Length: 218
Image (tube, rainbow, N blue to C red; front, side, top):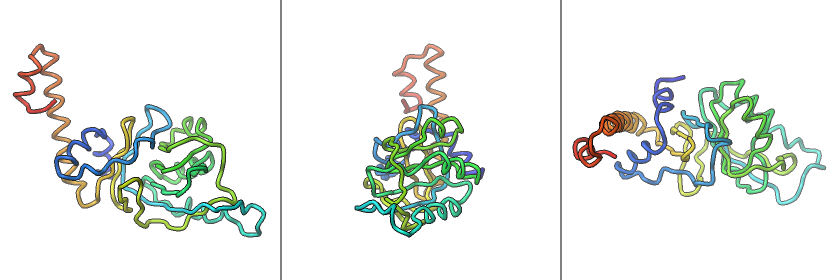
């Protein structure tokens, strides 16, 4: 784990958002319907992007192997990164049991998709972080293929590039541009320290107004 990833993994999305908002970059949060498989699911790290296209008609009976491009993605996804996928589909599962286990084995940190996931009980069991919009047993065979890896994608109103950073936890998913990560991390770490001071002061019996006026944070 790189130093930046390790530092970001100790933060939480609310503090990152507060810092980004103060920097004039409040548009950093992915749609709120993208959530983790459970309350403990969280992931942080540099991003590797994936984009795909769904077919209008089922192509399972054609002679083309439509799963091979997906397997090639599994082989290409770099270790130490979080994959973020724009599937352009609101019907299909873009993550499943074998794919999750493969990515985890290869050192990928987690997977975030503007779409569905399946085999979720198994994925939770192996501890691979997945964030998705919905759960469905409907898979991608003959219905979907990736058409870009490592290229910029958009989810909601957020432009996401490979090399940017992401932090996803129970509150949501925030994206930090690569060129801002050092600055944002330093500011977030200061925010966390200040909040710890406010917490300790209040628990010691100090009036909340006095604590706020002293630290300017709440």
